[in-house]
Amino acid sequence: MLADPQFGKDLERTIAGWEGIAVPSFSATTWDGKALSSATLAGRPYVVYFWFTGCPPCTKTAPLLMRLRTAHSAQGLEVVGANADEILELPYGDSDRREYVRKLGITFPLVTATAAMQESFGSVSVFPTFFFVNRKGKIAQQLVGLQDAGSLEEAAALAIAER
Image (cartoon, rainbow, N blue to C red):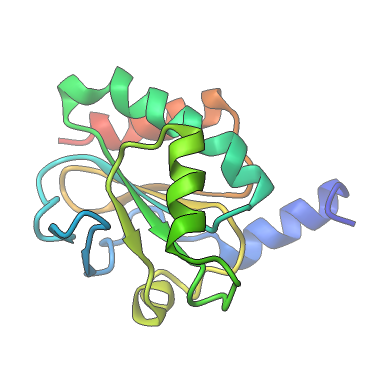
């Protein structure tokens, strides 16, 4: 069923429609104790990336996001990883998450997604989900599910281009 192209189109119609609207306000503390919010990211392009530990597509996507962040650091692109383990009630602990992050070499800011954050972004229920935000604080593109490097690059270019 998941491989059925019609399923993908139906799913996208159900969860799409975020392009051009203001990014929902959010506030969180990174795993290393720093405050991070939509306000602190204002004026720069960024990606809010919803994921969970052990998510097979997330495992493939995280390294692509790292490369994307590095490639566009001069344009100020940031990636914020919002881990959904707790809201999904998954059995992973802090040590499991740290090992996952270490194994994948993730260095972008990580936060624990709250129920309020998940809800404000449309009750994200498919992982990974990406919201590419432009400098004006508008969602330039939303992507859902496993993405290739080209799709992520195109979405980043849209977020970066809008001044």
